[in-house]
Amino acid sequence: MYTTLKYVTQNAQQLNYTVGAFNAHNLEMLPDMIRAAKEIGAPIIIQTSVDTAKYIGMDVLVSVVKSIADNEMVDAVLHLDHARNFDDIKQAIDCGYTSVMYDGSHLPFKENILKTKAVVEYAHRHGASVEGELGTIGGTEEGIHVDDNDKVYTKPEDAVKFVQETGVDALAIAIGTNHGQFKSKTEVNIPLLKQIHHVVNIPLVIHGGTGVKEEDYPELINNGIRKFNVGTELLVAWNSTAKTTFASSEVNRSLRHNVIPANEQVKSIIKHKMKLFMNLDNRT
Ligand code: 13P
Image (cartoon, rainbow, N blue to C red):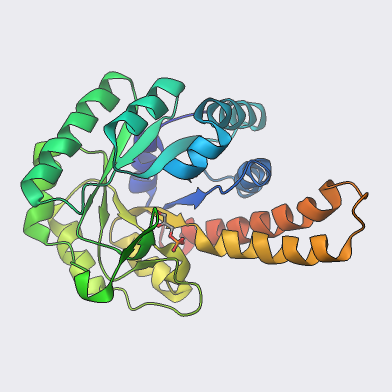
């Protein structure tokens, strides 16, 4: 079923697991991403950056995700990742995205609340869910680099106020993760996550999942992470596999021979992550 972020994360909350949110970087990898979810029996959030959404076409993405989800009987959400512009958000929702992230984390706190609230009002009127962000996640997002010195961790008291005043369905928090970290792993601040989870009762979101150690997954999930973003790991796998296949094939050989192995790599990473995200040892 083509569904919302609110729906899949509520189920995850009840049973204590997390939903993988995987960045699609092109249309080629998309069917195998959803089929990975089918094979595991898990829901999936397909997310696109604003730039990827514009490159592929928002209406095209909606049609593809919706039709595969319905045909394969997988709970799939289509989510706009890190949008900062209300017009992009409105366009995505009008095209049929079932979830959007408004990223006002770079704004002063009050302005972030006001702008996020306006997005929530629009999205909820149209049946879509909203993820907000508080604090800054390191690395690069939408081409904007956040220096380590400029990283700001989420304050639990701000999180309470933000959630109450905006009505968001999920909250992205900054607890030490970085976008695009694929050569090393990060130290996540679990004590801070516990403090936030103690006072905020909506689903929490981890960004920069590529750089998170797999041994930390259970503690993150047991403390309220219900959406787990992974992007760079898929991108690196797709690109490096495609580089090898393109380099070794004749120019008149069908493209699928170059692309299928790259899609299969993506599928296998997603299946591996999803098994861990189901948190079977700690389910309620
Ligand atoms: P990575 O690319 O570091 O896995 O992060 C993905 C993400 O958080 C998208 O918003």
